[in-house]
View 1: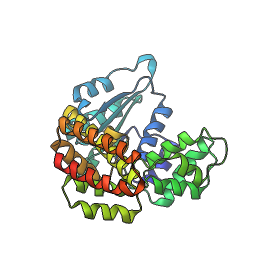
View 2 (view 1 turned 135 degrees about the horizontal axis):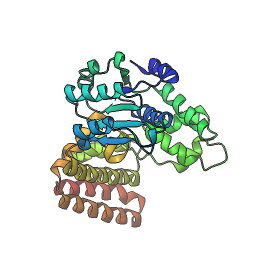
View 3 (view 1 turned 120 degrees about the vertical axis):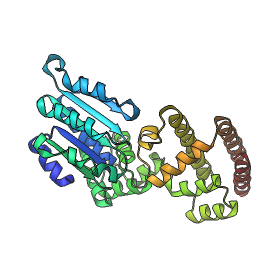
View 4 (view 1 turned 180 degrees about the horizontal axis):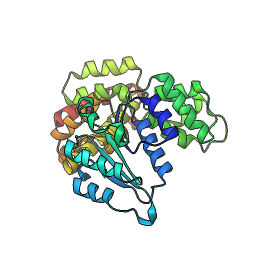
Length: 325
C-alpha cells in the first residue's frame, strides 16, 4: 500500500498492525504520532528500538490486559528483519485483542521489507505501507500544513527556500518552523537566511569526506571555491562533520549499528551514512580529540588573521588533518 490509500484508510479506521518503511522518515514519524494520539496510548505504549527489541518482552506486552482498560501500542523500530515466526505471532496477538496495536518502523533495505509483506495481510487487520522520498512540491505542501497547524505566517516560496537551504530534509525543515513560530510577523526568505543555519551541510560533506580519504588538497579547495563557500563556513562544516563522526563512533561501539536517524536525529542519504560510519570505525577517540584541538586552533588563528591569509590557513589545516589520519 502507498501513501494516498493509507491516508484514506486511517481516516476511517486504524489498521491494527502496520509495517512502515521507505525514504520519507518525516511522514512515518507523523503517522506514528497520529497512532499515539488516536489510540490515546501515550502512557501505556511500549517502544523497542534496534537492539532493544526482544520477542519475549514484546509477546508478553501484547498478551497482557492493559492497565485501566487502555490501549497496548507496541512500536518497534529497527534496521533488521524480525524472524517471520516471531512477526506472525505478534500480529496474531494483535488480531485477537481489539486493544492491541503494532507499528513496525523498518529502516533497513526495501528488499528485506518486501520479504515481510506476507505477514502483514489485511485479513488480520495488518497492512504494509511504503513511503517514497517526497518531491519538492509535496515537501512544500507538508511544511505548509505544518506551518498552518502551529500558526506560522510563511508563504510557499519561503518554504521552498528553507527546504533548499536544508538540502530538502523535511524533518530538519519542520524543526526550524517550530523554532520560527515564536516570531509573530510573517517569515520571509531574509528571516530564514538570518536565523536558520544549514546544519546539514550536505553540499560540501562529500568534499570533506575526500579529506579523510587523503585526496589531493588543491582539488578539494578549488571545488569549495566553486561552490562559493567561505573559509569560516568550510571550517564550521568540518567541525560539524567531525562532531557527527564522534557521535557515530560512540553509537556504533554502544549499539553496533550506524543508523543516522538515531545518532543525529534525521536520516542521511545512505551513501553519506555509510561513509561516515566507515570513517567512524577507522578513527580512535585519541585521533578525534587531536582533530578537535586542531580545528579549534585553526579557528582562533583565522579569526585573528586578515582575509587574504585565511585560505592559506585552511590549506594548512587540511594538510595537518590528513597527517593525523
